[in-house]
Image 1: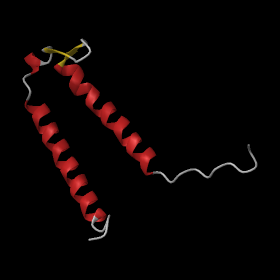
Image 2 (image 1 turned 135 degrees about the vertical axis):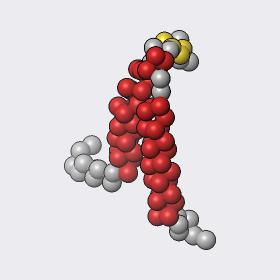
Image 3 (image 1 turned 120 degrees about the vertical axis):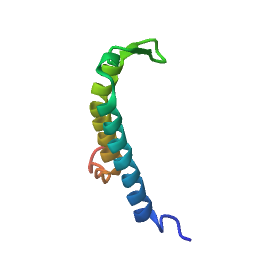
Image 4 (image 1 turned 180 degrees about the vertical axis):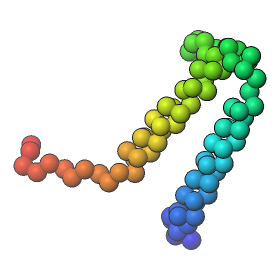
Length: 84
């Protein structure tokens, strides 16, 4: 098998996994008891995070990663000519 022979299939599987993971995550959020939204976790750097803050920050965090993926998949910029 050649490298990247099945890359399209692998990408489709990855996107489907991501889609259904996010649908599951949305379902879980809908089931959370509102009295638990102020429960706190301590991050690895000692920052206190409430469940509410973690849920609210998910979408901006996801968008950040989508931007990173977009940057990685963009064609490289042409190198400037005549500059030394």
